[in-house]
Length: 285
Image 1 (cartoon, rainbow, N blue to C red):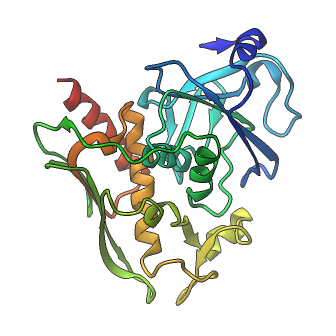
Image 2 (cartoon, helix red, strand yellow):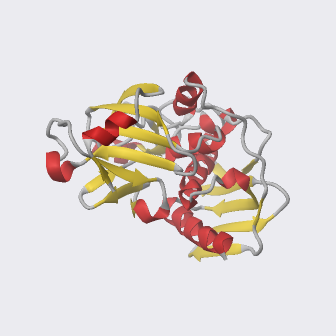
Image 3 (cartoon, one colour):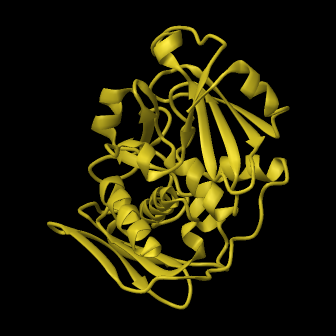
């Protein structure tokens, strides 16, 4: 659905505002949080570029596109998770969605005045601080939703699964041919501090980041090291779990509410989203 400026006005004053910069667009991006209606879920509001131009041109006031943070809105899982409708799209949604899951934030409008969510250092700790600044941050929710049967998805050496359990947990196994990483397995579950995941930054190869022009802003790995000191020895694994949680909330249900072990072996956004689709089907059956 689209909203007119009149509808935007009914949202009232933002609960909080964050000013950042788009990593790929190199443009300033403002993120506003607005109180939502009970039961609506998380909904992004983005500029309607079909009426008001294309990326690279100045934003104009007027209609906005409302993009629910649901699987129906997913249009890409290449390198990040992107939502869209028509020519309108929003990239890098997974980190702010993970922060929402960890902080038990729901029924909220997230207006992004740009075409990508600011990535900043590639973690989600600054989104948690934004939620906290306006009183939205709560303790992680209790897991009360039953998963009846296991779900397993494989693709070559990669696999993701959801296993019924008595509580929520997320695990990731990384097998990375790098002297600072190697093979690592890690699990996180409440009541472990959410910052153990939230502070984990995204990463990629230095060669790719130089090609994309990202090398000054995010963690890159070289043949035998990283361009920035890691916050944790297993920071790359922690970030993969962060991504998985952010993708799973696209079911429309906070994954922390589900009594299951979520396990990813060498997984990424594509498998994450496929698991979310299968999970949604299982919970609705």
